[in-house]
Length: 206
Image (cartoon, rainbow, N blue to C red; front, side, top):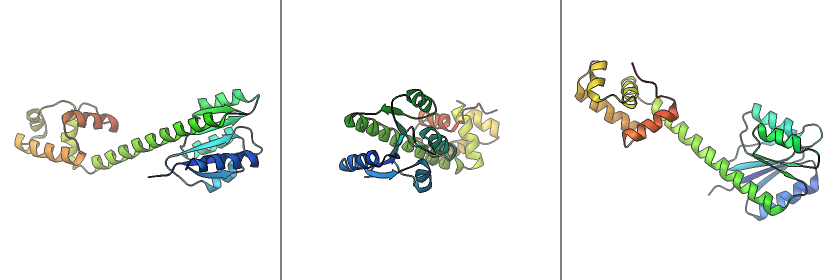
């Protein structure tokens, strides 16, 4: 079982260490950083994971850290901690992808609940992306003929019509179709259509 990772970025040593202790006591891995720069330098991908970051920090602010993460393709849920007077910034952060923010002082139970929800979200997103990548690999493994059959099948064309369009015998189309379905891992036409939608391969074949 994969142990969740909670990254904590806060220039306040006491806050950072107390959060590390809190989440370790709940069986989670934690990595604490005193600045956004330190996080970016030491970050190693983990799934599931989330980031708790102070919104107002010297040098690199929470918003600037968020921008740097986006530019580097670091896609993990961010929960911002904000002090009085920075709620507008927190709203801005959420408009740009942050999943939540809590005003200081906050209740630990509330933060824990938000972190758990963020970890579940990241795990779900990562699983979905892994499945899509596997689907792409399966599609790329098809032969050119199987691709042609794939596109016509999901366009709703029967074997007889596909055979005429490709200049092949209907029996040959049936064989290509069966092999294509096995390669894609599709058990039915409905499965194949869902896969085609995920791959963006739903245009009608001409």
